[in-house]
Structures are given as C-alpha cells and as structure tokens.
Amino acid sequence: MIKFSKSKNCMSVRFNNRKSVDSDIKDNVVVDYDKNGQIVNIDIMKIGIDEFKKILKTTSLKGAISF
Image 1 (cartoon, rainbow, N blue to C red):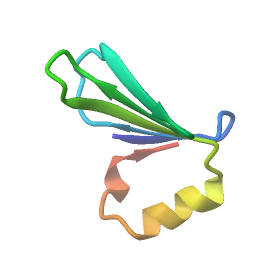
Image 2 (cartoon, rainbow, N blue to C red; image 1 turned 60 degrees about the horizontal axis):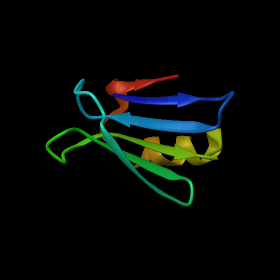
Image 3 (tube, rainbow, N blue to C red; image 1 turned 45 degrees about the vertical axis):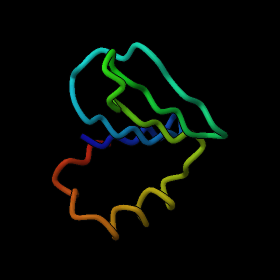
Image 4 (cartoon, rainbow, N blue to C red; image 1 turned 135 degrees about the vertical axis):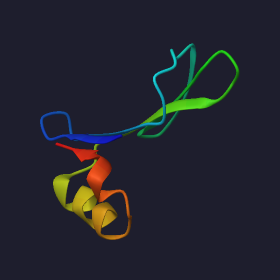
C-alpha cells in the first residue's frame, strides 16, 4: 500500500504487515526491515504533493494509493 500524508509531506510504501525491527536512514529516506532482513516499509520524507503526483503517473499501482 502506498500512502501520502500532506501534513507530514511523507510518502510511505508498505510491503507487508510484518513488524519492523531495524531501520536504515539516508537523507530523507527511511527503510524499515523485519527480523529476517526483508524490507517492510519505505518512508520518503519532505516530498511534496506535486512530486507524489509525478510518481503516480509513472506507476501502475494507482489502485493501491491512499491519501
């Protein structure tokens, strides 16, 4: 599921419902991992709605998007 928070200027891509136990942070991107090292979630901070809309135009995941 892909979510966008206008108030936080953050886009989140959730890959599954497993619990995050570790994270890597680089610049404005946070990648969360489960206990097996698999990616659980990716957050992109400080992304505006215009950038988010550009991403939507280039993906086929439009049905999985939540505002």
